[in-house]
Each structure stands twice: as structure tokens, then as C-alpha cells.
Length: 73
Image (tube, rainbow, N blue to C red):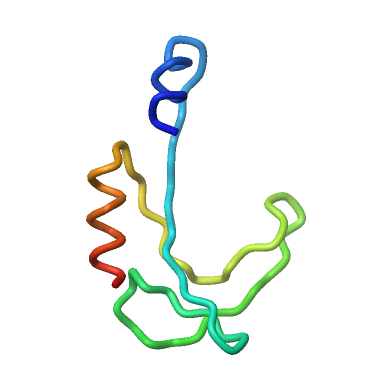
């Protein structure tokens, strides 16, 4: 993914946001928040179906993503 972004950086600007959620028994949990509260799905007219209240973090490389995955685990 980052190779493709690097290839087109001169033509476009990219912002990459990630979330890390667990879906188990129809319950959605944000693994990056550290809280055990359940989240809900909501429909947005522009963005489509979204997880309400989920944390989204900006990232620029694979190492950052792996750090968030380890944090969530």
C-alpha cells in the first residue's frame, strides 16, 4: 500500500487513517481506546456505514501500523 502511495505522491495527496476493532457476538469493541465500551454502527449519508465513536489515527508507515496493532492486542 505504501509503495503505491509513494508512486503517486507527485500527483495526489494521501492521508491514511486506521482503526482497530473487534467484532465478536455482534458486539463491536475499539481495541485502540483501552475501554471496554461497545460501539454501534451508524449510517452516514456521505460516508456510508460507520462505527460511531471509533478512534481513527493517522499513520505514515508500516512500523506505525504494527505499533498500533501491538497496542490493540
